[in-house]
Amino acid sequence: MYLYFTVYALIGILRLSAFLVTGYFVLLAEFFHGIIDVLILAVLKKAKAISEKPPDEHHPFGHGLAENIGALTVSIAFITLVSFEIIREGFGKIMNPGELNYPELAIVILFSTLALLVFAIYRAGKREGHVFSAVKTELKNDILSTSGAVMGVALSGVYPFSDGIFSIFIGFIIAYNGIRLYTKNANILMGFSPEKEFYSRIETIVGEFEEVEDVHDLSAVFIGNNKIHLDMHVTVDGEMKVRDADELSSKISQKIRRNLPEVEQISVHFCSESSGKLRKVEGD
Image 1: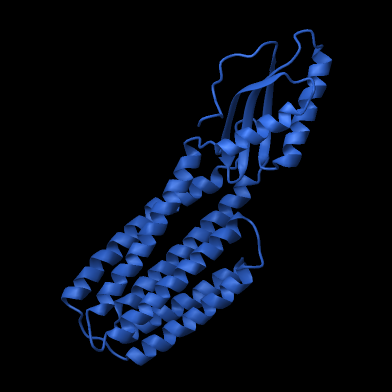
Image 2 (image 1 turned 90 degrees about the horizontal axis):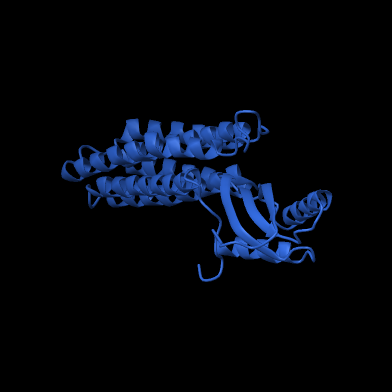
């Protein structure tokens, strides 16, 4: 992870230095874009460490939502505000481009940062996990926005307002990422449930036990990134002994976890007859 922080630090120095020398606002927009990426990675890294803490007295479902809270905070406090300011300044640059110098230097710096980003995404491609998935997404967005910045500088000799236009383009990329990040994490924090295919698989897995007559009232929510709490009612013979039901519960839980490792916590309630379904899979 430190490699990516180092790459972004170097890119940030190049972008800010080039802006101070050339006056191209698109370079400053890219600088702030990189700052946001670093903040996202820093928050996710810290939040991931918190999310891996085991359940305790005050957090019986664990700390898995820490990553989502961190990402939501970044999307609101940084991405949205910064994107708005960049877009606003971009419109100002369209109306009044100002003095622009050394376009060749700006393009060389931008191509240098592109090379660093390509190197970083190549390294990230070999790593797995939620944090590295976020790293790869941000790197791809950076490559897209930096390519736009190159276009803005290249066209500025003929169309000086292109600096402002492509700054707005970068601002909208940041805004889009902010909205995407907010929506994804807000859904999970609001108790987002898996798709109906998940429930169908649960019914199939549990239905394979000969003691099981019916599975109903299935309810599942995400308690973190790729972490699910599952609650379900299972109909069995009313004469089944408590010890046998306890053993069956363990077998069901083990089989579900083998087939669906994202299910971290399972609550199985036994009943002697089926009731109305709280969660109906068919026809959803």
